[in-house]
Length: 263
Image 1: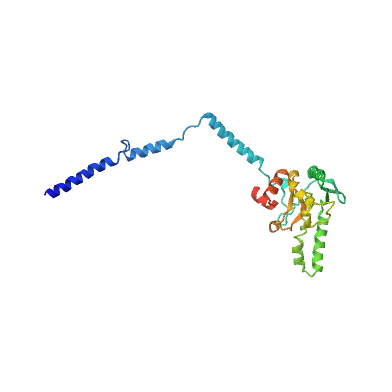
Image 2 (image 1 turned 60 degrees about the horizontal axis):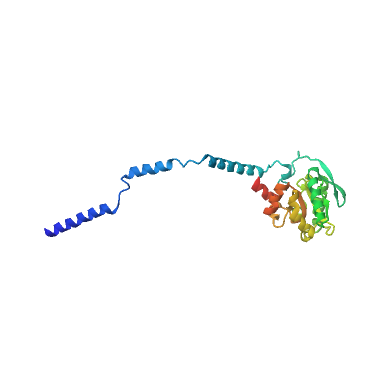
């Protein structure tokens, strides 16, 4: 009996001690705590008026920046021309005259101002650039393309094989940027052939470094052959406008990649 009384006394002390080990939450029960938490999170703290104005101003600046860098796929400067995207039949433009290596030649008159500025600036840096192939009409493009095919076939290739390899060097008629008056083949007074070695000349390096300032891009860069469908051509420059050109050259992408990313 005495032993049972001791056990009961020990249990009583344990229960009393437990009640003091965990203090209550300010007299609130569980539902009350939940209500208080929900009330605290129901409304965010109010911003001062000047802070709200700053937030709205920041949003406006971001939107303005996006608008400034937005590009339009209908912009003539950005027209994508390749085997998959031939020049639209309804596309038209006005030709203007430029001084070229073979005498006066033609290109889209809208690019002449920037082209002349680029040529003049290169001259100030001791680089004498020369344009050897700007605008070509459809008949001229067909002649160049067929001549290339014929040369390969004389070497023993079938017509289809010759066509395929020719299209990697000479753009298929109807899909040439030269026909749109937006592309130019550029050489120099010290390197007068259209070869990859032009990239390592002072003129080739100057063009790659500075062309974007005047709205031009190296249209068929090295390493992008599988995307453009054309081999590396360090002499072929295309006008796209200064803003797009700076992005393309800085990011080291081609026009096809620019379209995928920005249009």
